[in-house]
Image (cartoon, rainbow over all chains, first blue to last red; front, side, top):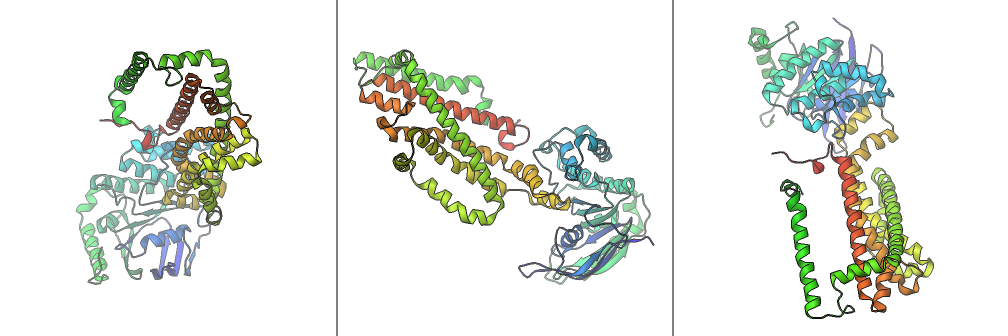
Length: 255
Length: 265
């Protein structure tokens, strides 16, 4: 069993308007794993990610990093939308995190180009975001999150807005990137199939209030590819995840 | 603009010029045919002749009006953006100051100018009124722009611990740029109106010698061709100011903003 990277203990998050996004939410994230948070909309999975990133504050409970290291310095975040700066080229978008850390453009350039090559966009370095397809924009966004060489990559339904072909392609890419950069990933999704294909472990959540209802290990080795979708383990795990998801949902809940 | 650009330069420039030629020709012919005296209505050729003949006087006036207009415009652009950044960032400042910005804007400038003339010399009043009519569109557009930042990008700047200065320069001002430039485009030509209003309010009592003052003076003396020549110069100045701003704004946005894109078919 690998070391624990982050511990979330009895987290409660209540918004100013009284909505309880998370209640008594506990989980451990282990170093090197690919963890998915799977649940319907409103189950607080995105909120959990924002709390881990330090973009929001917990109402009660604690988030600790047992292995040391501060929360923000080692985190990359990929949002639901690519959220690129339209006025900056691909290079300058990827440069942003390093710029904010005080690196000069020249110093940062090798790392920028490395990361762009990793996501397959080396040829598009000087292009502006509006000239890119949705999938390519998301790759830039991923490159931007990886350029600081974070220990932990947080991904908030990054592929939800993409077509299925692009999505499958990016699923394979993200598995490859995870290996290449040896990064721990927490991946938020509402797709059972996506979570099983990608994850080593899935935490199934339910809404109102957001809570953990099941934890499912995906016992299949990496690297995985399209063949994995045809295996019995994949089918069984999808079934288990679906049941956990629907079992926790009240009749009036909707995805 | 896009569809016009596609129909080509001939239609874009040719058609308006054709219309102008037709109207000027008809005007020239009418003045000649009905023998209208120049103090009633000068012919286009008479206006041009006056422009050339009176150029020594008119050029001085042109320079005076141009200088004050540009100075008022520059002050208003700088002040409008600076105040807009402050008000866009600090809600308390907006609550406190914005109502007064509105009061200054909605009070007709032509009514303020004579009152200002009690306290300030005419050239200062011209500058002030040019400023007063110009700053508001710049200010309100800047505030809107500062508030239009993508929330995901805000979160990203939070994540990487960006300080307020970098957040303003790298994110908020960049987001606000198209809005600010729209403010400039509306405000720029208004500066000329402000300057002219003040010159007219100052009238012959003022020591000014701008183009609007020249128009008033010329009508008093029934030198109508010169009045028209001065008006022509004011129009040309307004056109040049407007298109210079449009051109600069296009240069600043052409790489990334939808408003400056050519549509491909």
